[in-house]
Length: 159
Image (tube, rainbow, N blue to C red; front, side, top):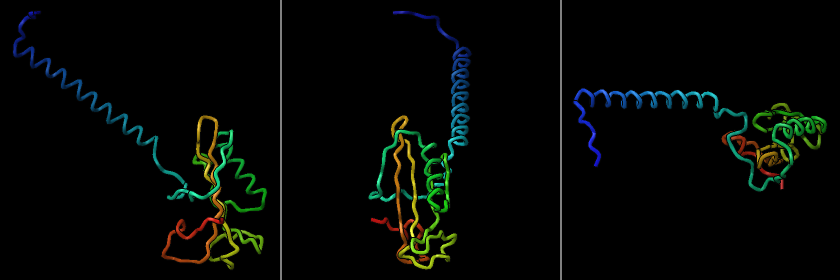
């Protein structure tokens, strides 16, 4: 058995203070790191607070979400549809309400005259595996106006 020299109470107190100081440093560093992570990894997004309908068509593309989002944005505009929301970083594109009979976009819901013929398309470009994107396309219509319901509850998938 190894016998070390006996430590005095003063030496033991110094060792305890050093251990406590190290613990304080580690604790303060963890607070700083978590604060920095919270600031830079904020969950703020322009995506709607709901997920696409499970029945919406999904396509896997061999591209990253950013170029897919830019491509969808340009294709939607090329088809003369008005884009209501687009965020390349979040991978989200949403068209304005489009009247299929009058062939024009509605800027506000009060401009919608025929609810049955008015549609909106939402695109979610989510990262899948490295270098691939899972693109969800959700065409929705609104059969009636119900002010007590949120927009996500008021849109039904076209199917």
